[in-house]
Length: 271
Image (cartoon, rainbow, N blue to C red):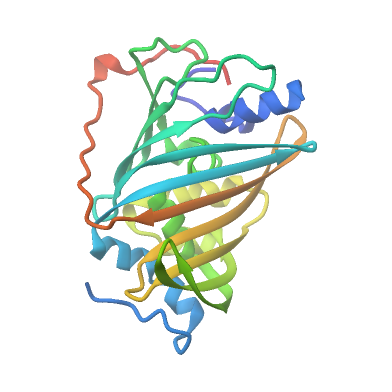
């Protein structure tokens, strides 16, 4: 598969497909988040509130289930919601065969693109893989093994059937819990320009537009946690994916330096 293409369903899901394949074969202006406001309106504003908040640290978790096997990919890093870019270190699960685990993958997330280092699958250790997220059938909601935090928040612009669940505490922070379903097509049309292309690709690529979610907003309306439930078909099997994004330490410094062109791998990689 040529890196620049990534158009097929099995080929497009770069990090996620590698894990699934192993499973198959081996196995300021604060928004009011109180219960008195309209629940759908509260979560739809979450992305705008994050953009005003600026930056934060992020933890991600992507749980995949297929054929009775379940694996989890974890990530941790920082994100700038005003500039829509960030950096994550993604940890793949141990190989089902018992082989040594893959080195952590460094991911740079920028509008329209995903850069990965230590991608493996024949890519030289000192090279980066660049993926155009607007050509991915999932818009990088699943591909990188971690949903882009901006995309996770922007998905809530398509929120509907939202209900107020209750008041909770998350890592010592009081939050309001909402539950609903996001419409991919609606979210893509309402998304900010930097994220619109990727979400539009996802709206076309996923079999179903409806994405169930649980969202947790703090008292300033900032998104603290969101969990989306996706599903797609890979190698003839339906794969259920639960993607969770946690945001904390708002104001953390974020520096993203893209690799020079000479360090970007232009060869073929395995799916």
